[in-house]
Amino acid sequence: MSERARTEAARIRLVVPHQLRTLARVSGEVTVEVARPATVEAVVDALEAAHPSLAGTVRDRATGRRRAMIRVYADGEDYSDAWTEAELPASVIQGREPVRLIGAIAGG
Image 1 (cartoon, rainbow, N blue to C red):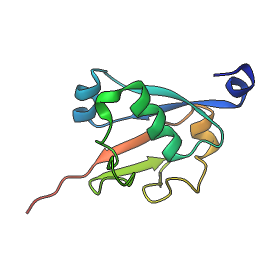
Image 2: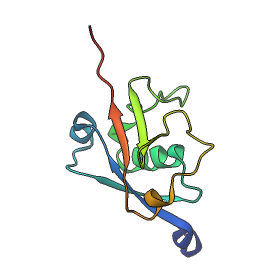
Image 3: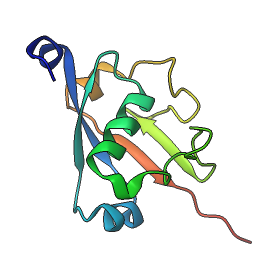
């Protein structure tokens, strides 16, 4: 990443479900660096680049769409359907709040 891109980049903290932490072989939060504007799509791109074992777990590889059982929250707001259009809130970009990937539970 160029020096200019680094100054315009954001370090994003992620809280991922236990199953994804196990696949990525990480514990606790994951941190990724993304260029601005920092969108959910950019964060998922960086997450998959840093942890290739997660490719296809958050979004479908063929369509690029979020998997139905994964929700994305940032600073208490649901960003699950705002992949490309909305920049993440300042509290996330500044590192005060993490992006949370939540795995939904289904059943009956």
